[in-house]
Length: 349
Image 1 (cartoon, one colour):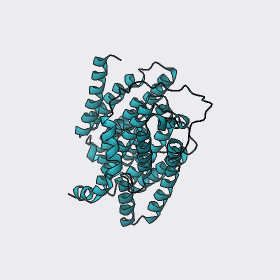
Image 2 (cartoon, one colour):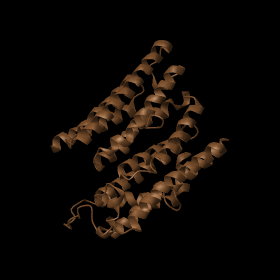
Image 3 (cartoon, helix red, strand yellow):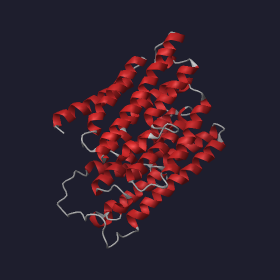
Image 4 (cartoon, helix red, strand yellow):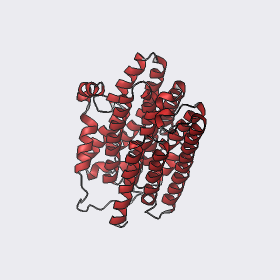
């Protein structure tokens, strides 16, 4: 893609997200979401591969449906209650419709079916943008409308997303689909705690973006798309293979890695709020996710690729990829747990 065109598209992507962040009126927020969607579509379709075009079409249809639902809900609220402000969303029909629309935007269960299919058709860099940056604008709206949304609905969506994210990834061999189900599970944890401690949701979102970025950049560096190709990674870069296994365990939420921090704080907060059953269910669904992360770690560090190669052996060319972002993000994904007291103190300010 032409660098000038790519610069314009990425600038529009940022503009759409910032516009949604800064808006207090539903029409302005809707415009930001639309700019965001229209900016990423050419980036997704730049490969001109049938699978990429299919993924782009699916993404466009789901995002257009969600945007139409948001517009319908905000118009309904303005018609019935006379309010266009995001904070003044008060009619039950409008609040429920907006919640489902934002769940569709984010890929939360039970409207998650598009996310694994779309992510599977994209290259890893575009998949990284879709899994991280594209979650910010809908989450900003969800945080603003949470006080008006029915509490059991949020808990149900959160628990169902953690369950679907753990269950769906068990039988996958494609790494992009596994990361898609990982995304669904992590978003479920964030929605689960959203109404009780929004600051914890922001902390979880930040750490999710760091860990997912590290995972995607590691896979891109190793040029791995399936579990089988992961087994060749240790020959190309043993240090990166060892760090990648730790990043995957961090995504699974094992101590003493950074990913343990949000899960620990969320379970603690749910217990304080008198929801021990929800906390127990969420912890049990985390075990499902942990299983397929351990499966990836096993393929990455404890298996040797078979001698009868079914894939093309990679050429050992001089490595030209910039690895500084990967290094910084990997360090953050592994070593933030000791800073938990400082972060919790910042959240309470």
